[in-house]
Amino acid sequence: MPIRINRVYTRGGDAGETSLVGGQRIAKDSVRIDSYGTVDELNAILGLARVANRRPGTSIAASDRARLERLLARLQNELFHLGSDLATLAGDRHPKQPVVEKRHVVFLERTIDALNRSLPELRSFVLPGGGDVAAFLHQARTVCRRAERIVTTLARQEAIGAQCLVYLNRLSDLLFVLSRFASRAYGEDESLWDPTR
Image (cartoon, rainbow, N blue to C red; front, side):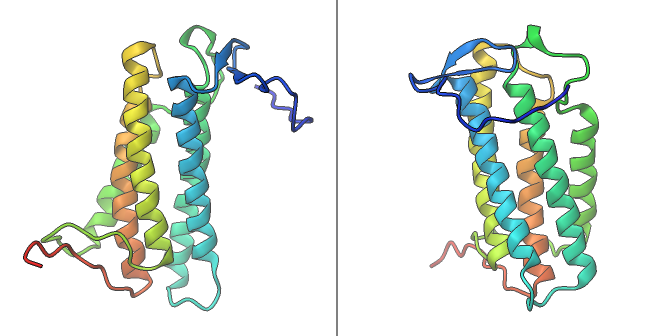
């Protein structure tokens, strides 16, 4: 799929409509647009986490910083696959179009398992925070859950890619584990919910 972006504005959306990948015009407040718009919002937050992770002078092992960078870059790329999937009606999907696949979900699961083995067992819920990177990852997790809710609504109305919902469900789990990993890697306290307070 050749991608060519040579114009930033087209005036085509001035009346509240936009085009899907197949060229169909659709209202900007439709569930389909809301779904991949929310995925785009999630991607932007991961970008903030990457920027925070690159900040010099912070106390983190180089290997942990590099691991976070590689993971976040990969997730951002895969979110573009997901956006491509959601921006295309089932009948318009091109055979070589990038979409989320089972292999992407398997990678998320393996990464969750590997990171979780290095973390202490939880005995309560984690309060979002723990430093800049961890806080951005917590925010990303909540936006991922919102995206999952919107895509669930879309899936009740229209056909979507088979792995879209599975990917979002697993990604939110990974973002939770990554936030804990980031807190530990940066030597920051992980605040837990105290139900007695």
